[in-house]
Image (cartoon, rainbow, N blue to C red; front, side, top):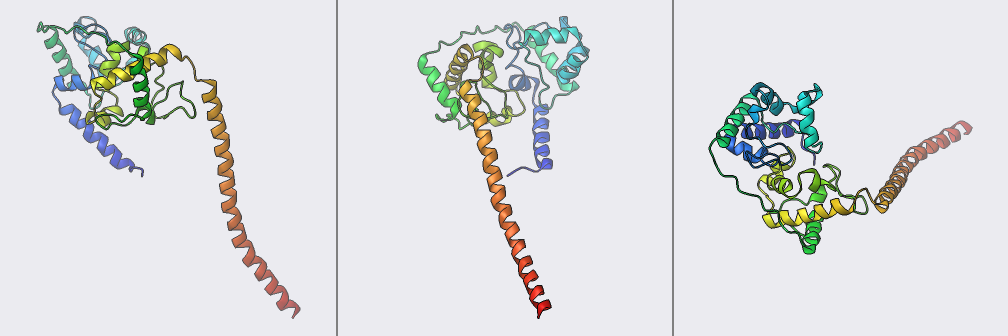
Length: 279
């Protein structure tokens, strides 16, 4: 059942207001730390320590609230950030506005100058078993501990046969390398910052073990698969042709019945009229 547009819009607006009411620390953890650190080095996006020494606060607020417009303006620094992020564009987070962006910058400055030690990241070691389990999790063959939906319902990878998975989300074949390998992808999977995934996984988070297993699968995909397999493309075309044929057959059977229902009374009426004239 489809949710009416005004209801879905109300749900999104309510969610955005909730985000905006969070403290800067909560907001950063939910929406920013998947791509950024404060003093811990580059992830997908740049390290935000001393970010206000690189650009003015006005520029940063414009970038945080509407990065697409800054990029579209031809700003060279924005273009540089995009290239360094493997062409993964920054998107505005839910509920963001100029006031909240300024509070986030205050929080970043506070953390950067507090002397809080940064915990060193130790990447996991992947095993062949992790790859197998990760694929099962992706396909939904192994249920997630916190009952989240399987990745394949919205995403695809090139190695899958048949239709290859869902088309709502992006292709995840190269996601391991595109999102900063283990360190970047770990943060992303812990708190997906997208408008679609964030509300879904907020109450159904992946466990640390599931994240490692999924990453093992994605790393293997990125290393072994460069393009959609021939079988996957052929099956997609075949399913499309068969689906079209079945659709025409179904429409034909429905309309043939409608024509019969109309034709029979017309023929009967014609015969009755003819017999009346002859009589």
